[in-house]
Image (cartoon, rainbow, N blue to C red; front, side, top):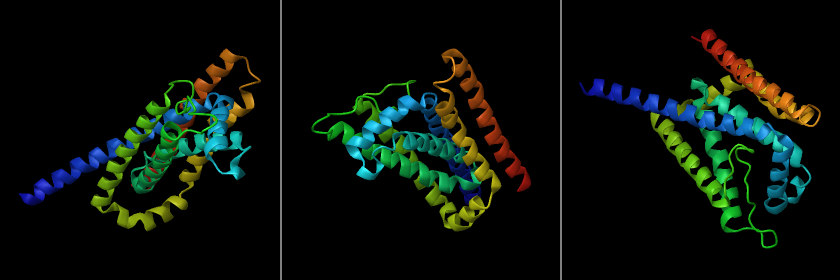
Length: 228
């Protein structure tokens, strides 16, 4: 009887953990695509944070950092849907959100003495605008969710297999397929935002994003079939 209850509890915890992983993954994907739709605007926001709060060697790398942030968020968001790699994705989600909490917290509570707080964090591009405090609260809530998710995974014992699963992830071709696909939206924006008519660009971008996501999930699904 106790064994049955334990199995049911573990099953419910696993389902809850998977749901939380997918929720955080979806938020990261949405955040990435919202930023990438106008990579030039996001690069300006990135440049403000770099110039005020980042080390000197990053100054001048606004666009490179903007593209990299969009790509990393997209990649980690998609990785969160990989059941077999959820330890890695949960650690990455936790680390990235912790960085955002620190950065938005500094901007909100300890702003630059000569420039003040940056008004918009650009977290969701031009889709949603946050105040400095709202940005900090948003990052804090997501970080707490990622912390709960990571604690749940730690208690399940999956983290003990992190070395083996990391080796599998690094030798899995679909991991690199997802990484390459994650570069496409920001690079598309970089190449065509200023060269295409606005409405044509938006339509093309809206068609591109679902295609990238579907190709990524197709790669994930094919991997699952090969290993089932």
